Length: 113
Image (cartoon, rainbow, N blue to C red):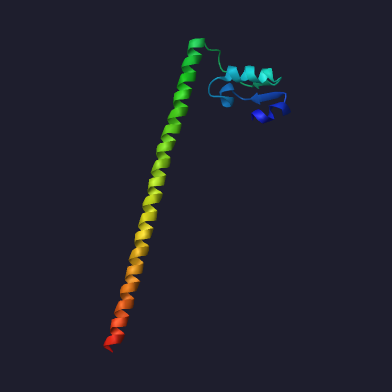
């Protein structure tokens, strides 16, 4: 997004938190320094600085929690994939053993005949 800022004059968003979960005002000042304005179509109600800080902290905790739980989900997926691969290898080994046992019994039958 930052690479393309020099291509636009205005960024229009529906709500400020759609552009940035927290630090919207910092982002707005940054874009202003590049002669790009940010306009929100629907303004959230004006909050006191303490309320805004609390909302920012809640947003950060939510974001990092999602990352943490996503990582746990990823570990579960990797574990399941590893288990499936292990089962497939065991099945392949068992199939090879069964084939070699069949070959042995065929040879034994040929020897006996």
